[in-house]
Image 1 (spheres, rainbow, N blue to C red):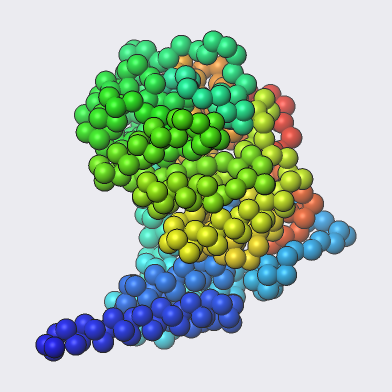
Image 2 (cartoon, rainbow, N blue to C red):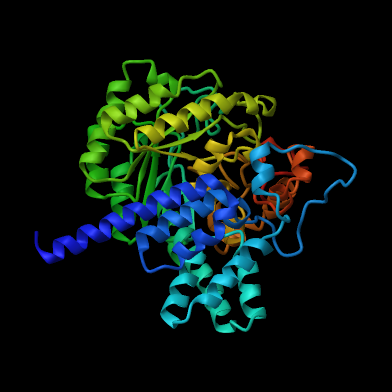
Length: 489
């Protein structure tokens, strides 16, 4: 056994031992936060990454971003009592702000002597979206002014990478399926509207190019049913746009060839009950296998219309075709509530389903992410920490980003809505506006109103609800706002 191999083996064993220790620290709870920050500040990326994920699970206030703008808040009702699950009481027992976590970060910063170590620590702290402002304040107050400036700058850089200017586009509203919970098409009049034509496609791409929007999400309907799909993909890829795709998995061979040649950032394949319990499941599986064979990042997406649904069927199919990531949600209402959705009174009934899903996925080394807002207080400790640890709870409903333009959906006629759920359409095409934020300004008041409307009295008192770090459920569950069309908000 040569010397280099022995050294490498020793290092690997040390890292493995450290990872086991980090796992045990997470099990012990918030008392382990100082020790975990030591790993975050260390020179081993693997240990730092594991410790960061453990901190995500233990410090929800530090990782969940606030949706509020400066000086915005929910007014707490001091006279009303409320009860959080016992595991949340433990994790949120400190004050409702992040002074505790920020103070520990400051202690660690004091211990770091080299500029390199401090810079490394700062860069790793940028992922704590809910605490970075408090951390920067503590740094500056202690005299670490340069470090505070670097942290603020790095956070903004990371946000641009995570959430570049983008829009979603539905070139067609056609679909082979008729899912009653579909937020896009369940209450559409029949026959559906005409597909986008070449002139509209060209106008949209020109508008995006003019306003620096480089990312396009293709949705629908089923976007691959769009007659101009190959031509459109070829056209916008040639102009330097990147794209991602949401599909029902029933993709023709011709469209699959286009996707293979003009690779997207990712493809999300929705596995619906209509496909799951029909002969169409074989085509879905073949689509998934083909995309994976082409080295395309592919995700299974599934909705659970009933808390009695069997989640293991989805895990089994994902494992069969080689998919390692599943994104889940419960059916939510659209703006007109013309689709079938899960009432809020049934949220707690989903606890056993989520617990089974997460438990079994962890055993199979699969990643389960939650893709729509769901009350953390309706989750078990295991489920909540799973979604905190993998970061998906920090990413749900980013409507407030990029001047409320992050989730804009453009329809075949180029009119648009705030998001898939709040699908009231504008009276003017998006190309009539001076960029995405200008278009979003027409409905930002509506989104602010809905965001500041809690789904329950308990949200008014929960530290996460008060700061807009948990909004409980999709904004479409809130009462309708007067004149909610985008141009009139």
